[in-house]
Amino acid sequence: MIIKPRIRGFICTTAHPVGCEAHVKEQIAHVQKHGKITGPKNVLVIGASTGYGLASRITAAFGSNAKTLGVSFEKEPSEDKTGTAGWYNTLAFEKLAKAQGLYAKSLNGDAFSDALKQQVIDLIKQDLGQVDLVVYSLASPRRIHPKTGHIYNSTLKPVGQAYTSKTVDVMSGEVKNITIESANEEEIANTVAVMGGEDWEMWIDALMQANVLAPNVITIAYNYIGPKMTYPIYKKGTIGHAKDHLQATTEKLNKKLAGIDGRALVSVNKALVTQASSAIPVVPLYISILYKVMKAKGIHEGCIEQIDRLFRDRLYGKSGIVIENTGMIHIDDWEMREDVQAEVAKIWEQVSTDNLESLTDIAGYRDEFHRLFGFNLKGVDYDVDVDPKG
Image 1 (cartoon, helix red, strand yellow):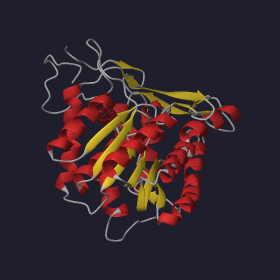
Image 2 (cartoon, helix red, strand yellow):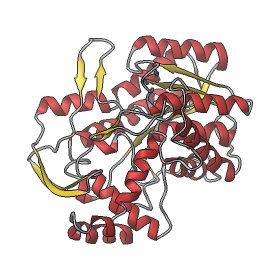
Image 3 (cartoon, one colour):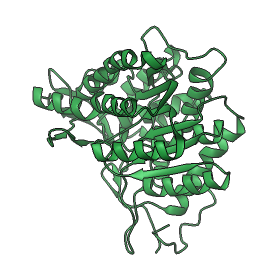
């Protein structure tokens, strides 16, 4: 089957197996280029198939020769339909890790469920004994609560009042104003239930009770804060409420982990093109401007560069764990530099449909979006017939 990108809104409904493998290889090459990390040895990544979760798994495996167990919820391919990008990423990762003699197993299913948590525990006991790093990197729009069966759906809305700002249709290039109505209390609570820290805590509770967490274990979740211009839709919006809950969960987890000298951490990461960020109004326009500014300054990073730096400099470096006075690790430090944000704010005021291509890196945004699904990778012939089953 000849596989081409089929884009609907902020989703690409196709993915290219050969391209996804090429993308995974690129990320592996970045880690290997920078040498070995004295890091974790047995790693569980919850949300391991794309974005920061995939980058974490790659960095652990190819940076510190870690055995990795990945959890994700992806759609497998059929005879006439491609699987999701995450499905192909996981296949590629396992193939490439095993070729290097690295342990790599993956479980596909609902990470919010008790059943999958038990499957993970059983596999850790069977193969690893204990894990010394647990990465929590889920990005799901809905959650079925494992105890009540209630279905929660998250909402990307401001809180308190409606919000009007610029946004961009990434594929057409139209810049226009958008007004987003404020969330009600139920929508806020639902978003916290999906994207907050409750499930992370449930995972750690289950792993602790099963005695599969190693002494000095680290568990880390990922966050984004961003600049003041995106606060209404992000930091102070429904998603921000969820991330505040995530951060508050670290205090509870640190008390629980104290007995085994474990640590629960949140890393604040840079704004990047991911399947999750593409869905948030206003944010794609901000990212396209940010990319322009950071690339010009030579400080642009993608997922793998961010996570590689996180592991080398903030988690497993010579200085040990590096936490800022916010109580969080910050690898958004280059994004939030004053000179970067001043230039972004200046362009934000000027940008329109007419000057989008020249003032921003919208072309880079589109390219990165396509790469998420295995397209636009160098060395891949997209006119060749491929088996969608990988």
